[in-house]
Image (cartoon, rainbow, N blue to C red):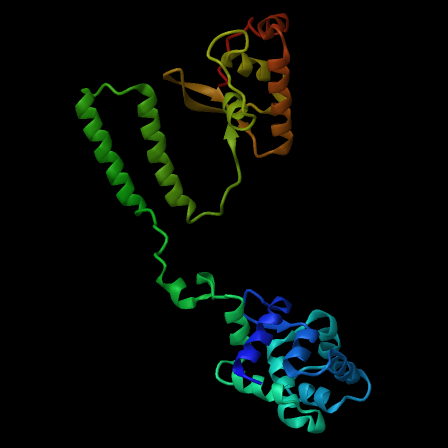
Length: 299
C-alpha cells in the first residue's frame, strides 16, 4: 500500500472525525476500523468485552487509564484520538495473526505528528486567541478614570474658564449640572469606603420619565406640576421627604420618593398611569381641594 492510498483512506473518513474547541479529536468506530483495515465489529467486540472478560486490546486501553465505561461509550459516541493511536499500534504490532500491514503503515504515517495533530489539520482547526495565554497577556489594559482629585481639579478649571467666557452669567441649569457633578465626584470617592447603597430617591416626574418612559410636558392638561400635586393629593402615604433641587431654573423644595421600595415604586406607577389616563387631572384635583392650599412642588 502506497502513501497515496493512505491519504485516500484518510480523506474517505474525513466526515467521521471531529475536533472540539480545545483541540481534542475523535473518530467513529467505523472510521477507526477503516484506518486499521479491520472490521468495525472486531473493534466493537473488543470494546464491549471490557465489561465481562476484557480482550487483549481492551486490557491495553484500560492500562492506559481508560475504564470499561469509556470503552462501552466509544461504540456510539466515537473513539478519542489518543485511544485511536493505541488501537492502531495494537493492530500494527501486538494483534498477532490479526495484525495488518495497513495499520503499521498508518502508524508510521502518524508517527511524526500524531493522530490528534492529523485530525486538527484535516479539519482546519486552529487555537483561538482566547485560549492563548500569551496573547491574553499582550492585550491592552482596560482604561481607568483619573483619580477623583484630578477630575475635580479639571472641573474647577473648566468652570473658571466658562465663567470668564460668559462674564459670570451661567445658565441656571448649567450651574446646577456643574454643582451636581462636583457633588457626585465627592460622593463617588466616599462610597469606596462605605457599604454600597441601593437607595434611589426620585421626584415623581423623574420617576415617570426615567423608570416608566413617560414624557411629562411643561404645559397642557397633564403637565408636571399637576402630576406632583396628583401624587401628594391622592397618594400621600408614599412619602413626605423633601430635598432642595433645581426646578424651572430655580432651587426649590421638592418631594422625593424611595423608589427602591417596591411598594412605593408600585404606588407611583399606579399614580402616574391614573394621572395620564384621566381626561382632566386639574378638574379632579380641584374637586379634591388640592388648590385650596399652597401649591406643592413635587417635580
